[in-house]
Length: 293
View 1: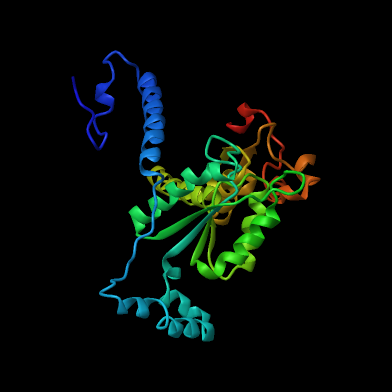
View 2: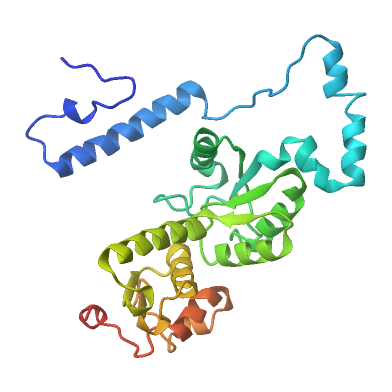
């Protein structure tokens, strides 16, 4: 009997030979989920804090902490920018989420998003040696509805301790307002991974594909399925980079976006979708066969 390797590289070889690709995919997903549960329970999460400085005897506590650290405190007081050199702030990212749109699992309650946020922190540390802290917050109002302003206020209060903020798994339409307001009002970079991250890799892939096909972005007809955080940002970035909005058709769960969509026109929370309704699909095409002509 074959043994599963520590790096899991031979996992697929352990499945029966007559399994289809679909069956293998389902088995791998089930395995990863069960293994994830065991591994997280064993290690009690993925992240922990380590010292980066030496402590060569008791007197070094007086250097790193009181009374020596007073010099650091007053230096930063006199010039806040030195906090990026005299503390870990310059290499520290806050991963902020209300856990209302966690991957494919939807609203997981605030602590339910910790696994994903720690996963993001793990990727940042492992791939880029950037430290990150998972911060899953309860932003519900008295009606038990997620409140965008509470996230905005929270991030603005914590920004003196971080070098950047990564917004994650915030349901729409709140995610649009949160990102736009924080980018305008914060003194540090604010990034929404689900929107800007997805848009950047999509644009990069499309640029390379068009090079291979010897085509120009402005000449392409573009059809997007979905009008949430990812695709609205993808559409806007593609238009910024030269795509013709009149050649773009975007579908949401009902039909296409166009200038007669009352849902977006009458609800100011969906201002990004309404902006795209006015820019794209001037012929108000709704049928897929017409969209792909």
